[in-house]
Structures are given as C-alpha cells and as structure tokens.
Length: 148
Image 1 (cartoon, one colour):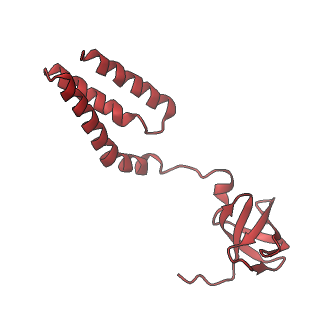
Image 2 (cartoon, helix red, strand yellow):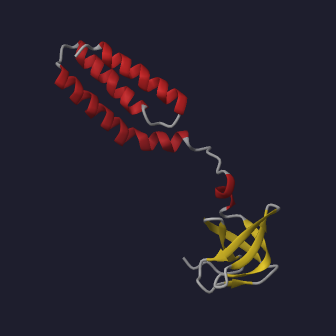
Image 3 (cartoon, rainbow, N blue to C red):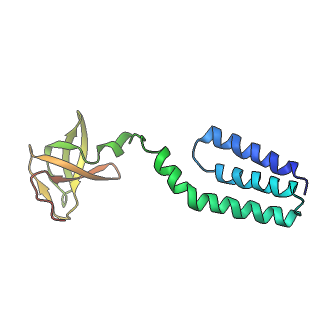
C-alpha cells in the first residue's frame, strides 16, 4: 500500500476532529501516522493495517478517559440538566398518584412528581430536584433526611 494514503487518512481524520471537537477521530489519526511511519520503514500493507488498528485501539482505550477528564472539566450543564440539585417551591400540591403538581424553579414553572408512587408534597414547601423524567421534574421535600 502506498504510504501516501496513510497521510491522507491522517489529514482527513484530523480535519474531522477539528470541526467536531468531540475527541472521536483523533485516536485514529494517531494510528494513521503510526501506519505511515511503519510503511516508510518498509513494512508491508498487512503490517501497516495491524499497526493502524493496534495503535488506534491503544490510544482510544488508554488515553481517551484521561483526555475526556481534562478537556470536559469546565463543561456547563445546559437547559433542564442544569436544574438537577437546585431548589424550587411547590405552587400546586404534588400528588404523584394523581399525576398533579407544579413547582417554580428560577422563575419557571414545571410539572413535578416524587420518586415514590404515592408521594405527596404540600403547596408552599421547598423541594430539591433529583432528576427529570420526560417533561416532569422528580423532586423531594427539602426537609426530608437523606439516608445513604
């Protein structure tokens, strides 16, 4: 195999990585450069492919977790995901069994329910948002004790 193809693959994978910034193709770009070097050393096509696959997998398995840890440190949670852990006030009594209840969080009204099938929280109580299920917030009374 002509080694120029590995350089082309490297450039294409690098350009994709630059546009996506998702840490998805960079590992294979490393494999392509390693296969190019292997080809320049006179190793045949089968050896180049083995080096490409092996180096790509090694980079993916061993460096991706570290890269994600350090590159995504300052990631801001967005939209509804950012509500988890925040507090709200019950506007309409929450009755999970009857599928009713509304809370206000950051000035926005949301449908809400508890995690318990027959959970109830009175109007005016302060709640903590534990999750989101569909378009409903999963809440618990702030005054409940956390038993972990």
